[in-house]
Length: 216
Ligand SMILES: *Cc1c(COP(=O)(O)O)cnc(C)c1O
Image (tube, rainbow, N blue to C red; front, side, top):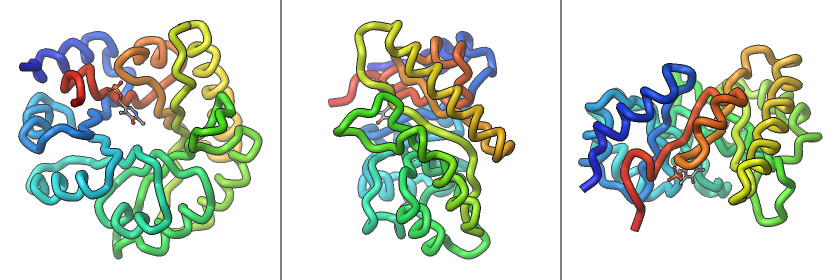
């Protein structure tokens, strides 16, 4: 049995309030999410919509901020807009527009632009060069608030390569902030590399295994 409370204390100790913890709860039960919430985590990330909606509805009495961090298809935008406060994986205007158009009344959705920093064929995310034009598009949508960028670097065993990807992401974030100063969040770093990510300038770390243990 994983000791969720201890895991969270351990991470808090390491990050010293330099970043927000997003507890990635995909494939983990509502009971475990509640346990993490009671240990002080208020932000949770989910990848799979159907699974997420069930948990969100079951836990709606708790003041949780839900972050969508999975791949987005157009036909999912309506439910994502309804259920999530944050969306980390916006990489094209069409998706932003659909989130905006399906946003419930009196709600604003916080969005991050996902960057494909290592230009991987198979990966979601926009190329660095296109960030500003997407940012302009997002800014024209009244129900969305552009908050920054998100990255999933290439899966490298070599920490040095991950470090380079983090540095490139932070540079891209700085160029974005020149034009959009409030878009200052950098969602970067997971269980294996969150300390390095924070050292490089991450403001939001997405931790799954490090809090809940292995996924099956
Ligand atoms: C699953 C997932 C995580 C968490 O990964 P861990 O290695 O378990 O911390 C973070 N970000 C994204 C986008 C994920 O899909």
